[in-house]
Image (tube, rainbow, N blue to C red; front, side, top):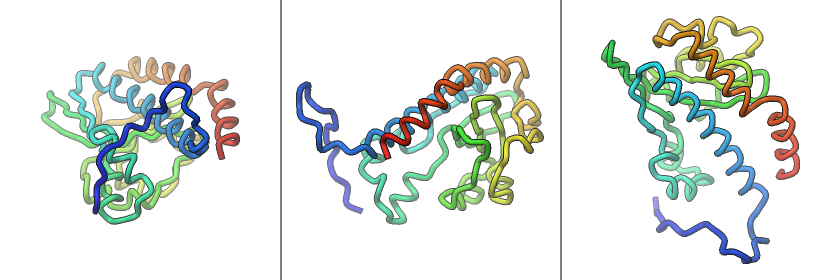
Length: 198
């Protein structure tokens, strides 16, 4: 794989930006939305005494990630597809991978890009952030389920988990934080922005 040197992608003040496509803005909008969800989840783990570390390639090698976002080689796909966080429970001496997904619809669908997650990242979990609740599903279980409809999935709400030692009060507070960021006005704007930038 040929790697180009990172280029500065910022536009100078007053520079004509007609060569910037709507898809570029939509990509960054979704990336920012994902980072908000990831920060909420990371801070929840911190609050509950876990050590957390950013793991995903988009966090470590940002320029490389942007350069290969459209490339379809095996190497590029492997770099793009890695969990967002590593969390360590010092009390139980246990480490887990976490993939954070922000979901604005009423379901979460397992994408084929995660097919190798159960074997590549054993002991890993999806934490799905919605405007109302957080959900926790292992990579293995999500691969079997393929689709998670939230109104029928109370059993995988984060408050029901027996893997991580969280206080329900903390989960409730962070779910409220998520409702601030991803509440009704955001959902309406999200739909509008998505339609305008397509």
